[in-house]
Image (cartoon, rainbow, N blue to C red; front, side):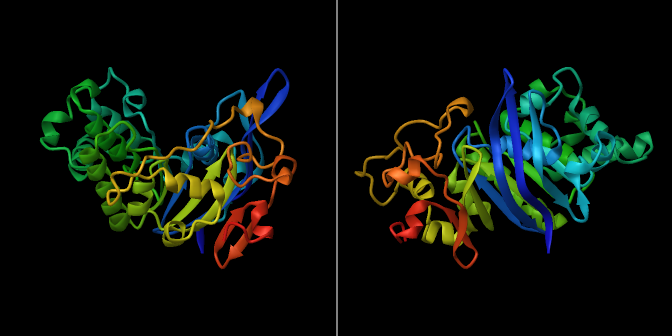
Length: 324
């Protein structure tokens, strides 16, 4: 049974009275203890999807339709006060830029304590003890001393560990990690991913992992949702995604992966750019960049269909078996 279900979620941004879809009819589910990777280029809708789940979309954006169901609660129908009781306690989120998420003028230990106090009644001594224990749990050495330091005293990787400590403070059932390893070097990235993996197993926590890095997907994900321009292009298991991607957009992403066994092979890129929300194509959103595009692709949007058992893709070429 799914712990979290997103049904036909639509989040629009408004400019001069016109609506622009950042998340457009997105549906997927997350099972207990599993990691779902949401992948796509910058501008694909990953972060807005995460913020929509958390009820944190700021104006001029808003969720216009669809449902986010956590256990038996429809989050999109709750008031802000009701959502505050769930954020951090049941569903928590870490962001791609920890320096902008941490208050530069408050000691890190106090910031972790604030995350705890939002949902727990606890005395001062126990509060400090728990904050220090959380710092240790996420791999921060000399936690008693570093408890008193400001965020500027920490490296990028250590700041992300602090954000993880704050996120897991109340032992949430779901952690949304929005590009958690962006701008970190490879060694630190591996350490952060290993930490998330250990916490998932220890706490039986589900993870929604937003990333553009297919290496991260291969290492972390059970299932994968491929987004492009706010549309779900493909949903499948991790294994099937790498063994046999069905959607041309996913296939194009795969060609961009460097090959260590063929160093003479030129690194490929996807032609063009992700279009702005104000300039989305009429039909398939990927049609202007797709090497398989037909006339129909530029005029009509294909539906997301189950092509193989548990493997969904959105493409007109499936009608002709051209991408199988």
